[in-house]
Amino acid sequence: MGTESGVEVGLWDAELESLLQRVGRRFGRVEPRRRMRDYVRGLLGPVGRKNSWQIAEYAGHGTPHGLQRLLSWCQWDPDQIRDDLQDYVAERLGQPGGVLIVDDTGFLKKGTVSAGVQRQYSGTAGRTENCQIGVFAAYASARGRALVDRELYLPKSWTEDPDRCRAARIPEEKSFATKPELARVMVQRALDSALPIAWVTADAAYGQEWHFRRMLEEAGVGYVLAVPKSQQV
Image 1: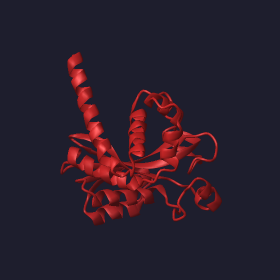
Image 2: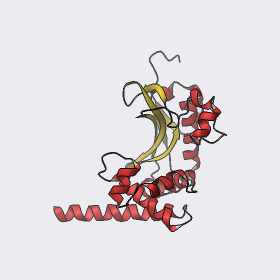
Image 3: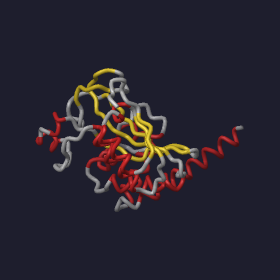
């Protein structure tokens, strides 16, 4: 039993290293590539709090400065890495009957400086909290499942305050978009990618939005969307 577990861990580790090497080309120098690898392994590892200090300690770094520089100053494009990830998931998990799952998640926060943070309803907490909201897309097939895209929800309290956005390094071109609008952008990206998608599914927050349903109909993709009981047909 122990040998089988060791083999599975070894295979998983080798596959992760293969993926990290694949996206490593998006980082121009060897130092950020190594820091990226350490950061991802720290996020996946048994680290109590996923902050730069504890991840750096887990990775054997003397200080968190290298990881902080990776996240704050190094030149790399997360959207390019997203595209690499979607290609990878299509190769490993892609099947003709694949399903794209859309949902949002809240991240509880203290303070007011984290991008997009404000008091707002979080389905994760089940109540209104000081939090960030992210809209996510996951791909699922009989082979497995994986997250493949994300968008940060920026409330109007942020998009209508340029100085606040600038301080949080939010690009100037970012404007207010509802969660269903963010979902439409992600679904269209996924449909344009190598991912084979037969169905899209989401809860009532997205199913009640007719623009979202119309986009799926025009794309010719099947969908299963929840709607509130007050929805008119």
